[in-house]
Image (cartoon, rainbow, N blue to C red; front, side, top):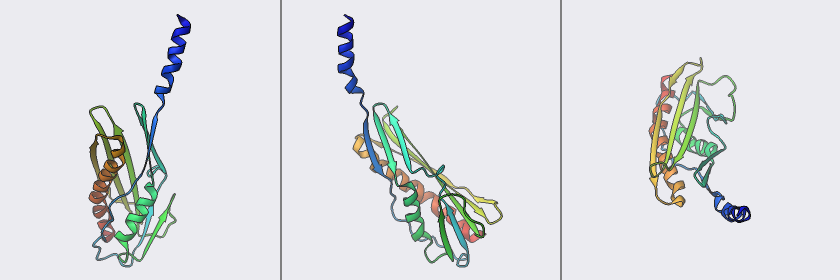
Amino acid sequence: MKRRLSILAMLAAPSCVIAHNEFRLNVAPLSPVPLTRSAQKRVAVVLRPSALKPRYDMTVGMLSYTFTNSRALFEDGLRPALRDKVAQLEFFGGEAEGGFDVYVYPKLEMDISTSLGSTCTVTVTFAVQGADGRLLAQPSHTATRSYALVAAAGDECNSALSEAVAAVVPVALAEIDNT
């Protein structure tokens, strides 16, 4: 009897293999922000690894998900939004050097759940600080999308991400004019 149970356990083991799904994060292109008093301002965007992970790895049940490209998507998205609107725009992977008028700190949180259907929840937060370190604004937006097929998780997470970014970026970057 013991031998039969161990054979059954060995036969069942391959069914415990986790299916891995990898997706690249991206957002819809951002429009230029309508700034009117920022042409002489220097802006630092600080992409901290703790706030923008290189990889978002999540496991739900027997499925694992990896989302990549968070840093590049914020760099690529913010460049056109601030092009020709500020005197200088620099991106930093850690703490920024001093001498900037405004510091922008994006943060991305992601979660996949299958408790009541499959959903992807994305929260984007932008902290905007003046040169003196004073917090000027910290808008945040959470968006959730449902999906039925695992292959659709990437598209739905990117849709939620696009919504959150579109809601937060104009509000956060408008603060550049107010410094």
